[in-house]
Amino acid sequence: MSRQARAIELDVRVDSELWNDAKETEAVVRRAIARTAATLSLEKAEIAVVLTDDSTVRALNRRWRGLDRATNVLSFPVNHAAGEPPLLGDIVLAYQTIAREARAQGKPFAHHLAHLAVHGYLHLVGYDHEDDKDAEQMEAAERKVLRLLAVPDPYRRIQRSKRSPKRRRSGK
Image 1 (tube, one colour):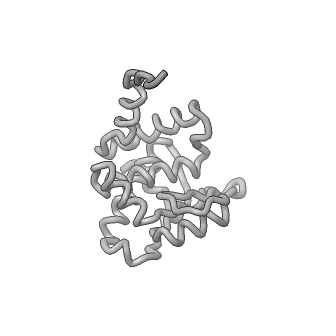
Image 2 (tube, helix red, strand yellow):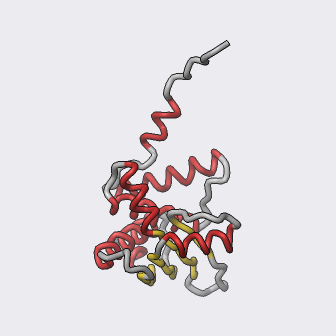
């Protein structure tokens, strides 16, 4: 890893026994975060990652976003003081949702986890997907990092469906 990647101070907390292979999971998360930081040339930063369950993420999503449902990843950026190594914020990952999505999409759990760690990190540094242009920029950044991690493009199927021919209208 580059010097930038080593400058990331990452605290990974396992907050649910569902993450039964915590060492392997932590390695995937650490590698994804380090590669993202190196790709973005971020010199120093502090990040916390919480590995938890759907009920915890649902409560956080309800409280902070007004959405009463679990989701795969939440990011909570933090403003930092000038001159200090940036405390970028927290990334919270929900085991059941990630596992369910990986199964449904036919991909290895570790690949989906790496993608969501990268996705969460990008949110911490200001990326979003509120409109098509922003989503395209964020997806391009994700693809770049994931390629370096040897993780297949998670948006490949989505792109194909966008290019599929228009369906014929039925009826009148």
